[in-house]
Length: 143
Image 1 (tube, one colour):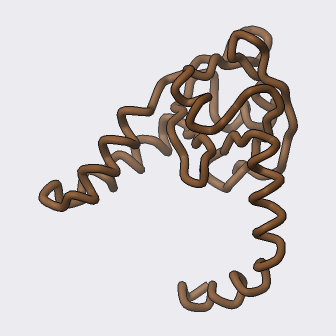
Image 2: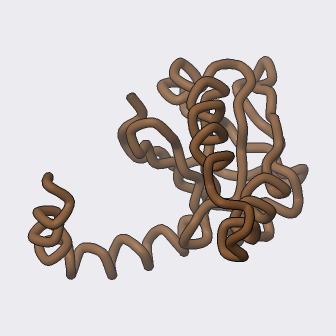
């Protein structure tokens, strides 16, 4: 399970150290793609296969499904962890997430996310204010 919050710095070549605990879960090679809310999603290949299977089941006759799949899969890339524990984030994904220097890795159960520190702080502050309201709405999902 991927949990926690880890702070790392992107180098000038676009490489960043993946937290050791996340490397244990994600493996030496995994998938990175555009995430929602201006972050990046990281998936173990096993989790990626599950997600791909679900997305394949979407009706391709629906414009929203086609658009989502195009953007999600076209932005995906296989990355490999180097001997120093780093990955190279493709330029288009760095741009999507606004990654320049300071980053935050967060664990979200079956996936990890990479955020720019600035975006994560903004998101966290706005989410903290409504955490109780969101918790109440979780009952709508039979939580």
